[in-house]
Length: 218
Image (cartoon, rainbow, N blue to C red; front, top):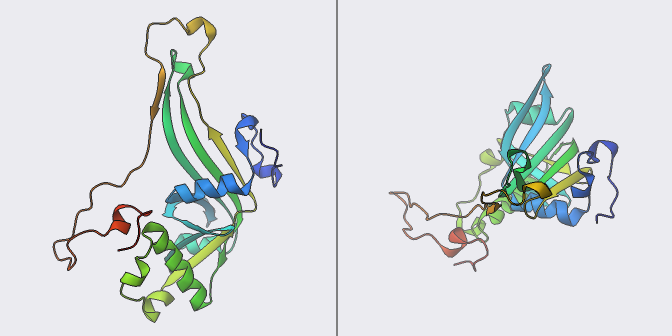
């Protein structure tokens, strides 16, 4: 049972609160497992929600983009809501109404702040690349000052966040247990496929850290 209180009223899970988690270990684990988040914000009287790649350093979630990005401009002036969802399994029940999904989700509220100091931006972008393929940053052509200046990096604290998790099997009504249809869970997972080398790539074989982020750097 989750013993951590909700950090704020707007993060408190109301629907099926037993599935709520407010501890940083659970929240950080879900943030790290995902590569894309959706960022909701207001811009010129309209509400928008856009997907973007993200990464985490400590107790902050980071995003980046072009300096002229509408979303990044809006996020520096108002409140935002970041959502992450991972589908872990299709729950196949004996009735349509009890079909479900195993999932892990995080919702973050707060304000983004912009990283202005060049070294801070550079180190944060390094963390993004290293999260994709450890050791790759040192293999790349260094970022130029022009490229760094054209890139905006924002971060939002994970202090006002909540997680919601559904795990386990089918929860059918007792009177349906004898119904003659298959019931169970179909696991879902994201895996890295076989790399496709660019025709003009000088290096022809994908290194181990691209195939498997946990592999030693080659």
